[in-house]
Image (cartoon, rainbow over all chains, first blue to last red; front, side, top):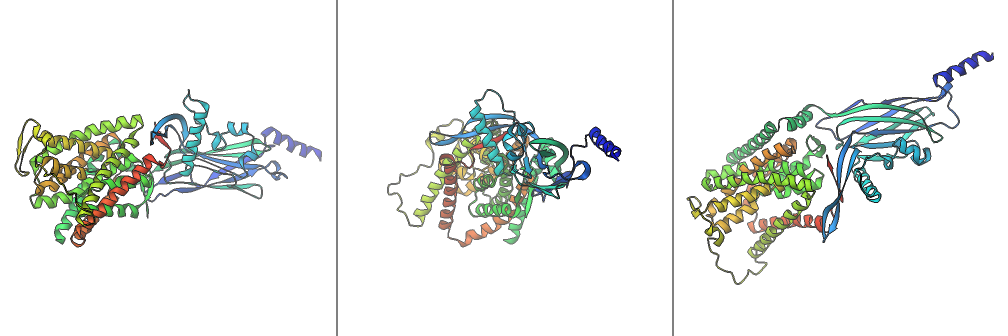
Length: 252
Length: 303
């Protein structure tokens, strides 16, 4: 009688299944930007598999992070000089994500301590922006705050403390909306299972956001064939203008 | 109806952009100005990056000036000799302007310079127009002592190398129109304006051209310089958004028709008053951005 139970427990211990597992998925693996693109909504969902299939009395919490491609950026700050606002100081960030959204089932600071949050880059204040060296820490912090504020207002950086819904303790889902001005590239969706301030499991999926069809054609030709592209732009405008002139003559 | 702009990398309300184009078209039909001074700032307020706004506005100016040129050519209102000199200067200016744009971008002061140029140019021209319009409407006393204006400007007359420009009725140095074209070429690249509202007064008051050919010749120059600037922008900044320019043009092509008809209905002095107020409005908005409160303290450049 005791033997099979013992075996079962041993199996869980050997396969690491005493830890809960994450089975994540995303509503779309690629997002296509077409002429009618006004942004998109991604559903990040999945299941939490507890050992033995039993939900513990204190179920784990979930945080999901959707992160865009990192860019090297130069930030400039306007200051009032002799009554005129002009760019004075600038600061370089070598790895600022073009998009960053974090949603969690409870406020992040109640889930993990600062050190854990920093390790896993959880939360806007924990982004690893790789600032260029040599700057005073307070200047660096000021620019970081400025970047986060600017991009938060553009809907590019966001933090939703109660954005993850967990039903029956095992199914989680989070909606993340991306605005139309997102950069294109490969995004990563990370799901974190957190209990007692520890990250129990991490799962990652990639999402590709890219321009397709006509939009892709335009964006590529502008860079690869600038001569033809410029001539095409001039021709279109000349034709439309000539068409107008023709209409004028007809109506007069 | 929202449409995604592939170069600007964001979606905009297509109807709003077409409406802006139509408004600019009406203006250009009414007054013969390109309307770039309205398009560019509006696009920037809308959230489109300044470089894309400036580059795409030049494409729109190209199209809008075509119909004007056609009309003026029909009634022989173009001095091609003078136009060629202006265009030569304008092309030179647009290339130099592109270099200047890059330098300013690198130094990070491009918004400041663009803002300043807008405030100074629009402010002074809007002010002059407002005064003119108020005097014409009889709401303001004209200046009592008016010096008799000499037809030929002292500095223009002192330039060496004189040519005969028959259609303009002038015997002056080609250097003067060359410099004028050069300056307006720089402005076209930097500000995305056709420069019509600078060139036309300069042709009348500085060069002393015969008024019959002023508007037509300036339109020919604007057309050539705006077309060249579109090319320069496609080659250097890669910022011409064909979709944006087409939307703007679709509006302005239709708007220009109605503008020309409206011009026969409304009293011209009221029209000038309206235009002056609009120009001053844009200038004041720009000035507020410079002196009182910029829309954003931080700006981001991708490296």
